[in-house]
Length: 262
Image (tube, rainbow, N blue to C red; front, side):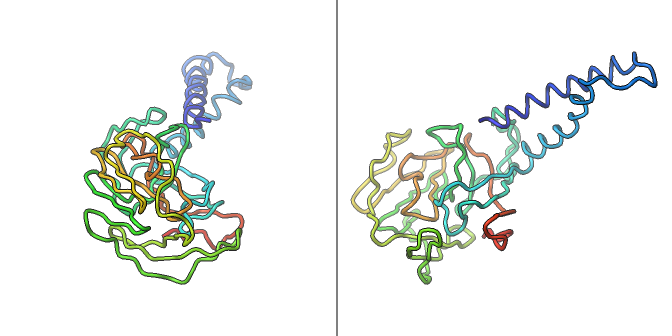
């Protein structure tokens, strides 16, 4: 479901009712006459829909985390907010950038339209920016020949599935985040797709090495062995970017998670 398109259609319809009433029909009604039903239930919603449309399209948009690919940073059921203007102002529905601001940086948690099916929104961490040589070998990340620093933490217990994963602090870009790997999972990438610029990647028994093409990004989940990401389906084009995730505003199962996004 394209909610942005539905919201735009409702905005245009309610705006047309509001304009028709304000410019034509209101002047023809007697001062003590009641508003017709189409004004009460149509035009009266226009200001509300307008505010929602502007906020959601240009400022901030809510999302719900549907999978565990970003554990432990984001859990299934987290409701997050996504900044829509950090990476530039885009036209709603078409997603065309009209004002260029900042570019995604390594370590950002980014929402984007899934390259294989743009009707779906995905969320991953930016690992490689245009021009980077990203190597993920034996479950360790190297960028432009420099190993990304990691610090081992106590194992992470998955509360719903009751098993442990190896846990690390990884320093990527200017910040740090927690990252998980599973000791019994293979290092190689099984069945990668034939994605655009596939020739920029080489696969081996230890993982994958890719050079990020211009205007694209290499992204990975923090739950490394339980995430389908750029290792499998390729690079995120710049035009697919939705925004930068920055805040957990609700989790019905654990209210302590509100504001815990790091």
